[in-house]
Image 1 (tube, rainbow, N blue to C red):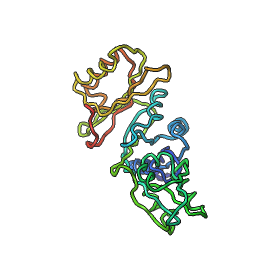
Image 2 (image 1 turned 135 degrees about the vertical axis):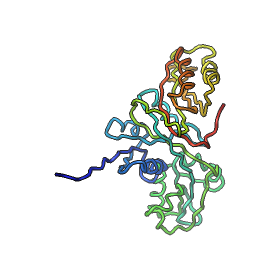
Image 3 (image 1 turned 90 degrees about the vertical axis):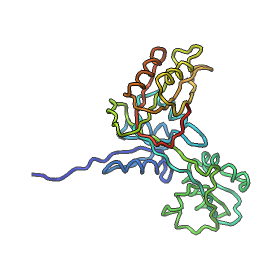
Image 4 (image 1 turned 135 degrees about the horizontal axis):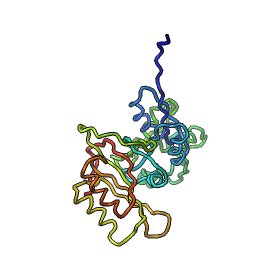
Length: 290
């Protein structure tokens, strides 16, 4: 008799390359599984589409506390059935590393530039935009000229980055000291599990703009208010059909199977199509918009 025990490895897709904040989020989420493998993809779209190519989970950024919602992720919710099963909040900290005390240029990923704009405005005159944070570091390490790189703080503990002798390191140059990016774990849509009464849930939906009329948004807000469903976020996204038409991505407290949530959504479904994206545990530190 064969008594061997087989461990199933969960494949988790995330935005690459290695060393990104997305990898940190994916590694954090992977702790839920006995065995997992993190797979890297070059774009958010390909990361989500990996769910059709063998990955069980996709971990992608959905919101940054400074720059707001990640539009390509929210827009994918309208185009294909997806389910949010968890969220992970990752602190965002950047440092500048230099191979010379007076660098002539600085390598920085385009999103990182936006999150460290104040420091860059006062210290860097020649900024070279890179596709990723790890590319910025690689260009610095390969440079024979005085240069610097804007990199995530956690890369300083990376085997390749941390072992380098830098002429100067400037820690925590992020514009907002408490900068955080929220990531969500996605899977292909499937029947929703029953709520655990010991868990505080948040849920997400997309209200599809296929019946536009005056007072549409007000009707939606009133439906949530009447049934005492507390909103956590509301973001409009253009439908791409014509000016003035928008879908609404909404997160709120409660489970999709809670009676007051079902009542509010039933009222909205009388006029618009609603895509239910799932219910998942959330941190009480999330701010309310009600």
